[in-house]
Image (cartoon, rainbow, N blue to C red):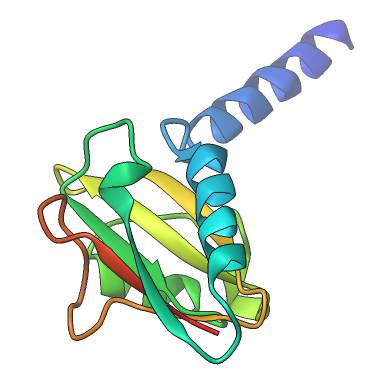
Length: 136
């Protein structure tokens, strides 16, 4: 009986170990973006730069809209990304997915707070072109 329980636990550990184990939720970016949102007055547009928040290397960052499905995220980013936020059924957050060398490395959940975010006319951000527009 003990061997069966050990085998089941080992199997579960192996399964969970393969699930985005390198993926990091960047709560520091979440806090800093939250502060930026609060600073924007109602009925106005502002912008913020990601390079003032990041402390890691990334090639691209994608802004994922509320209600985007798992397949939609992967189509938008071009990489495998198992969404831990369940954004496909949420309208209270945006997701910011950071990609390095064709692999999702970090993500941040951005609270909407009656705010709309955009990348202007860009598909994604790059470290040299990293402006996020905030509209309240």
